[in-house]
Length: 266
Image (tube, rainbow, N blue to C red; front, side):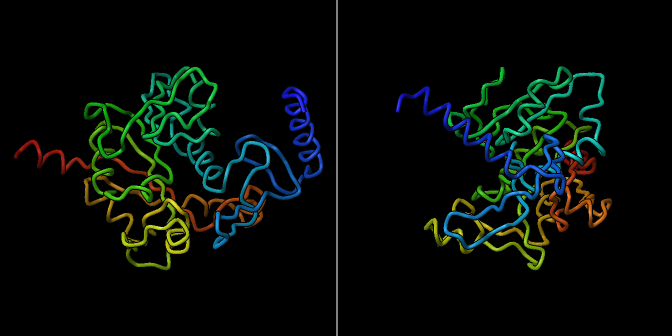
């Protein structure tokens, strides 16, 4: 089949599929699309399945929809009249499109492997190692780093780097998958196979399951951490309608004045 016909057929199939699932039972908070239900996300080896998870149009997950609502309702990211310098680690496409086209955001999307991002926006994803971020300290007004640290063997170093490049008056949202049944974070670096890691940590490229001590790990590098139970501001009906995770906390982080003071004295 010629390529142009194949592309047309794929678009046709996608259009017909979206028509088949349209409804008014659930609604994506980002793209505003409405469906009969959200899609189910299944990990590669099938150890974990999350129902009512994925938006059929913009492909947002539960965590994206909740974070988007938080950014709009509880931060000044989209309300500021001056330029906000934003570092976005492992930029999700669903956010990239909004950030890269906002005239009040000086946007820095970064990843260790920028070549994997085939985004068509005007801002290219820059190469950056989160354990050695190539920017000077106190550089960014805002940092968004969602579901990245669980991939990083030395997450303390990565947290320290995020702390270093954040401005003293800035803020960061640092999200990770957390098993709230665990008191402490579980790591086992002897598990190296993709199947073993998915079974142990939830995904083939994860190296840990964070526990309830995640907040303390962030505080250990200097962050002031507000674990905001923002999802509690919604009713059970809204949580289902918008496809949110009712156990998700938003980790809103700022620089500790006392840590900076102690460093200056030393």
